[in-house]
Image 1 (cartoon, one colour):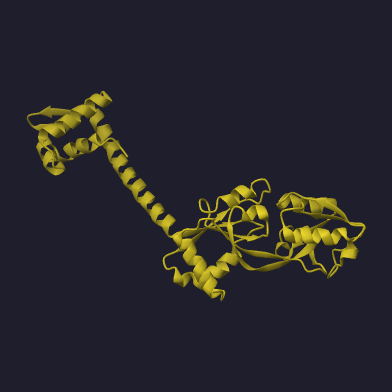
Image 2 (spheres, helix red, strand yellow):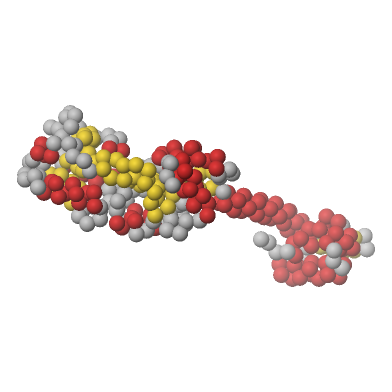
Length: 297
């Protein structure tokens, strides 16, 4: 962390002699002298005045001594902090959380099983919902995150992680607050005739592809493909255009300008825990505890 010759220099200054410093450092007096001479040569400064009465710090030596003491203290603090961080990393689960993928379901489960993992803590790592970067975030499981919670039957997501299902959410629709359907308690598919319905592109979600097939069988509804994965811009577009948007019940409070309304269809989508393709022993231990709590063999 610093030039080790400073140790010899400060010890000589503290002891007032080469012989006493040598005893303290378990070195010979000549070895201590060589280190001081080498330090002075390296710095191009005279640090000590030698006389028959002992040694005395020069003005330059006093400055180096003062800053060397600070370096020692700073180095000790840095090493202690690094050790604390290393210990924390070994005993902390990092939970990814975002507006569309909040970690509450994980937290609820954790507090049911945490007694089986004594000493472990949770650290929530926020990330942004961005359809361009979400696959990179999923791919960071095992490095940046240990777990995420996601609503997912995405083929692209599942290529990058493993999944433990906790339950399902039902698909609904969202409309702007001033929309003609905003105050309806439930909507039938035929009520959407004349509307533009926003939904993710075909091919990645079996559940959403099922919704698309049902919509295509009902004439008079135009489909607008969104980005492959929702982010806030999709919700903003729905609010700004007045279109109808396929959504899920757990996202009802994501955008204050939209109202989420149940549909008379049955298209549930699974949600659960996302974890690395190659989980650590600690992750496996948590998942085993979770499975026992959930009553699964």
